[in-house]
Image (cartoon, rainbow, N blue to C red; front, top):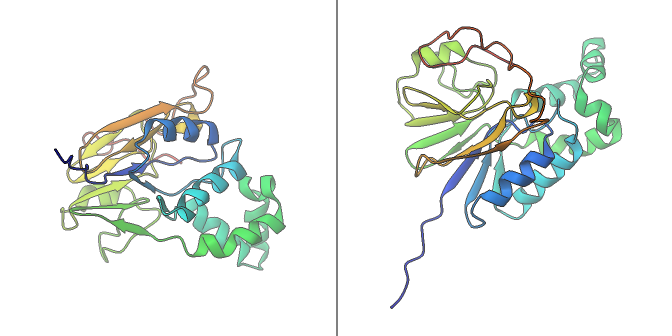
Length: 226
């Protein structure tokens, strides 16, 4: 009897933010033949930024993963391409720039500039924060406007950007940033099966409160975070 191979699934992974250890734990739990979509903000905040970048880029080069651009990647690109005092100030406050140094950051610049803004699946799309509700183009910082006005035109939209204690759902929106760098979890969501796989984030023994989770702005939605 000939066995029928399972169709390749996708796993959309929330903001890693330099939590390389959590990323390794998560990769061990995900099927080796499935495709990985990193929802952006792989850099900054966590203790192992360089290792995180190298690991994800290695998966990209293997053809197993797609790394989407987040607002933290965009901020680093903008600062490196700057030349103004404000750009220098932004670099001075950037965790990735402090950890890697200028030379290494500039070696990463071309790769970061080519990170896509969205990945389109069958009946779903992954992007970092959502879509501008006026232009319906990917927006790396949008929150409430998208949450309130998205009408399902692109199918299910899977986003990171705003941390929550667990994977959350709004109408036609799935939010997969579960605050790995804040002592939460690093989560992956499969749009084909709606399964969730999560592992402990940074310092799970001493969890810190997630930012801005005091009161929901939309029913079932977290408040804006970092």
